[in-house]
Length: 400
Ligand SMILES: Nc1ncnc2c1ncn2[C@@H]1O[C@H](COP(=O)(O)OP(=O)(O)O)[C@@H](O)[C@H]1O
Ligand SMILES: [Mg+2]
Image (cartoon, rainbow, N blue to C red):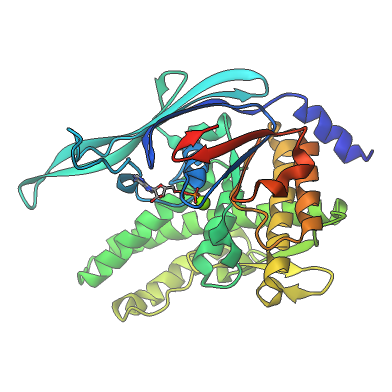
């Protein structure tokens, strides 16, 4: 046994994951309760039986908008026409969890608030997700990251390497904030400033000092974002080099972004100065709806290391295997560096993997002794886990 697997074993002797999950008015579930073990959990059922919804509910125990990136108002169970509260949107997910054998409760719920809109003199309602841990309301969702962490693979990610840069960038940023809770705040603040900046420019703002100060804030946040991304890429690349997988192809990860590249050669302060000057130069691009360069444009590039092949030119099955490689490395790094195991949410993960790779993946997951929620329409895919997993079958929203 390698030194690494010894170390992993030491960490995963302590259990982390969901012990009990309760959904209320969440998607297709009026109410659902699951008692789960810290082991692989296989959920099978026909299309539309509610498998992904369960994984999505678990993803709401972590910061952000869940594994579908959904709008909060779309999640509440769509009520039947004859229900008394047909317009209600509230939903909740509650869980008893373990973090290294330590018990905690997490509750998250959607609340609608009304606020007076001064400009329109009307009452506007808006939705917020409230999060409680051990009955205490959290002011920052990111605090959840201290108690629980989830890593997911979804069918949408089968196209991760093909389309535009935005989904890859979000994927990468999620890998980063598993290690660096501040990163989530930084990216959210950056987006907020970016919107403010473009609105100011488009509204014909002539207050140069104001614009400059926004640009300065954007550039210092932007450089921090770029640095955190570089750190995570380096961590994963080093890990993969030292611990190559025996079944999944080794990946090489790269960042393609002006600011990230510049940090190779210049100090953070120099890059900040460049960034803010560059934003000022690009104000006219905003006016003409042209490309604005910066950390909001960075691409995350993945290569099949042995072949030197960019992921987008690999076969569909190879792309899936590369994705699994990244997720496995991230999972192991997280256990080693953060000291507690993430929960894996693997939605239809067997799709595009050949039987050998599928079984190898299930084997590896079992050996990590963590909790993995795995969905499929095909129960026979999981024969290899028959002794080591909890099996559930979903029928019309009921678990058996
Ligand atoms: N807000 C909602 N209210 C009620 N049902 C919903 C809501 N959103 C999605 N659904 C339904 O939930 C069902 C199960 O979805 P899903 O979990 O994605 O199925 P699958 O088992 O194929 O993964 C679908 O039929 C979908 O239309
Ligand atoms: Mg599904």
